[in-house]
Image 1 (tube, rainbow, N blue to C red):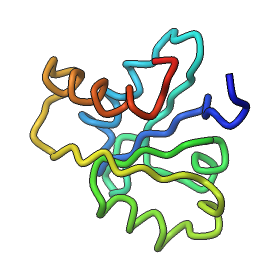
Image 2: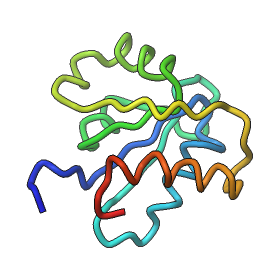
Image 3: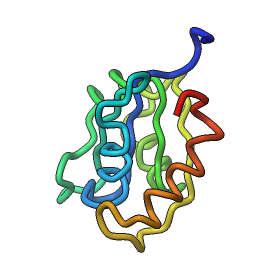
Image 4: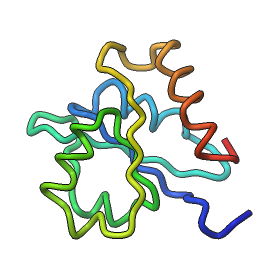
Length: 114
């Protein structure tokens, strides 16, 4: 396994209730990856902090606007960290099977040990 492969994954959406939380749950008990999730908005279940970004080896956002918000607020904390836009619209409920499949399809290209 290349040492550059991320093991600590952070998933970001707006409210941290549906998309990013579903992504985090997909990695529960995964032997190769540890995942956390957060949201960019003030009312998020867990709001993203510089600490989250410092912990993560790779950051996955659901929409480009999430990446833009992270760069605006946490530019220094993002230095050298890959930020991947998954292009997953806010149209799914928590643990929706279609959302899970879409996440897995997008992430398989990026995480070989998935």
